[in-house]
Length: 353
Ligand SMILES: [Zn+2]
Ligand SMILES: [Zn+2]
Image 1: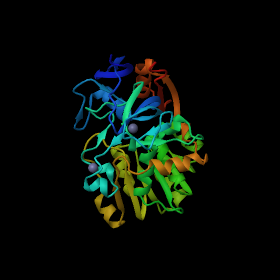
Image 2: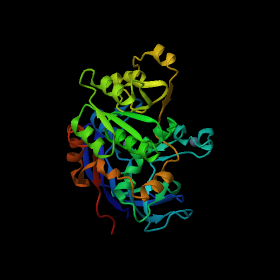
Image 3: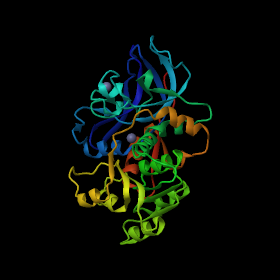
Image 4: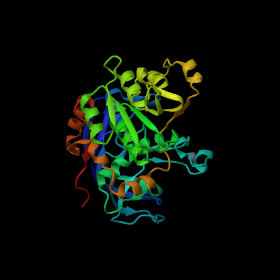
């Protein structure tokens, strides 16, 4: 008889239901993971609310969720790198391994990537998930499952910071202090930046950034406060490295003005509309380097090493925890309570007998 599990299935926008579905079949290169905890990402909330992101559309019932850690409970016959009982973090995008991008190490650009919770691929708001084993990373005992799950959004920050060629004497500004912004701030510190600042319109998020070790924060909604603040902390020069995570068109335009001459700008946040107006003359005149960021590559091993030293507590961004049975409440909270929530974590709980 087919083994069953609890999973949260999105049938259509706002139609999210926890029900019994078959446990996924195990391939020879895969491991079956019992999910310990899994975060709610902005993209999950977006699919829940709108049923699509760009060209990816929910056309059939889908299980969302892609930020997870759990325990290996079964392995396919060709799996060698993990064993039953291992606590692992899951990198949720499985790539082909053979294309030009995969071979050159930029596998985040692989055209054949199969990424969890991106329609039609199921994610892991469920008791179990199967993952190709080369995308599993054993967690050292000093690392929690929560940190393992947060490696996914942290990876975006680490990739952004390394795309921006961070240097220890850089003054860094992170625009937007949601989960990705806060973890980008942390990533900048991890990779050695001495001075990291942040901006957000929400008081709660600015405070959290200060708790996480930002040197200072600015509220871009107060007229002139951003420019005056930036001028004060950078001696009127602007920031060496600006990382934009909000996707707000105004913030994207601001990056050009806030960067130092010869500085670098990294764009992470996706704007709601494709075209955004920016001052190109100013960009050219200041000889800025501008980088796009799409997901991440090769970040998990180094992130695990850094976190296991215990000097960076990324768990500060977790504001709420819910059982899988309360997923609807959890997603609604993440969707509507941005003033008080940052990362909402789901616990799928006990599983297969
Ligand atoms: Zn995510
Ligand atoms: Zn590839």
